[in-house]
Image (cartoon, rainbow, N blue to C red; front, side, top):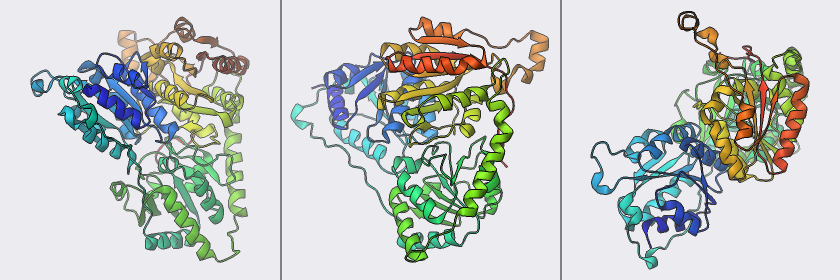
Length: 549
């Protein structure tokens, strides 16, 4: 067999169900013959973003894979890899490359070298006979420890080289987990129970470990409020009486209320990256960090205590230790805490309700977020967002109720990321409604891949906020350019674009028309058709609790 066939058979062994591609590297044909569905994208980074979304929703059980042409294909995919790296998402990138005898010859592009800073592991398959060995190492890195993208550069002569059929003996990599040191667990519980105003910060590591039940049990056992990171949003039901919401560049009023008064933060499955609301407040708190990656420790904060281990196993240990420490039949009274959360949440929502239910024209984007949340079936919907204003507007107000019912992201903020993310999520969960909120400028970067969603039968709901002003980077930010050179706002008719690409599409200009249009878009999805709902929105410049205090 050829080297490309050996790679395809190993991908099949590892449970890979689809291969995102822009063709012409010989792997796509071998993969199709092996039973792996090839999906042709119009732009490489959108395909990488789709692999990202697929992996998130599959929780790593199946890895998203994207394969690129040599040279420009690998060059174009870089932004998608950088996004996955920033958000710690395990995807496999398989770029073709020039023959081995062209390595180091200008202008030959080397993906394994160029991607080294945005991957967990970046390597060249330098001999056809080494394919099983190097693929095993790749999947070991994808399935163990802190997640992240892995890249394997495939030189043309390696792909076309001969590999003996009988030499291909390969078994799927089994994930391995480790629990925390019992002494560290004991100390963590002692510190948590001694705290006067503790908070649990839950990150994406809890989602990957599928430890949402254990997180909820620990929170209820200790009556500790829970806030999530952006990537961790949805791991704790945000309608729960102990839920504070998501701490991001914008956040909820009850996150702000409790974070400004907290004395201890127990971080689980989070890197404690210094960003977003309350970043400086945490310098003065007792920090307990539970992570599976020792490189997280001391990265941005001098943590007071740490537990190294898998989030699910560590949470199980924390629960058992808490029960032992409290004693049989004992519990923590959380009535005052729950009442305080409810009061803070109600006051915050009261302040924002005029925008959330606004009848202004152009339509206020917060009205779109509010109507969107109350129109979809939240239990059976996966929601995500784009960078910039859509992210800052939806994160605080959209309540995530089920694990992976919301895909939050943003340590890197690639405009247009949400389109591919939604497509990948739909591939992973075909029976769910998958929607994404995106701005007009972002859709202008990636919108042609709506045709991919149509052609490949991946029906998603695209909700476009079109304010023709680059939102937070509005024309008011460039007064000199406006005055001297007549700079104009961006524009476009995105409903017409969506329709031309084969999607069901509507343009909405009145607030009362938002919900009916969303309902028709959702029905189109159920009928197997992608939908684009373009909302002509205002240039809203007010954000909830924006800033890193």
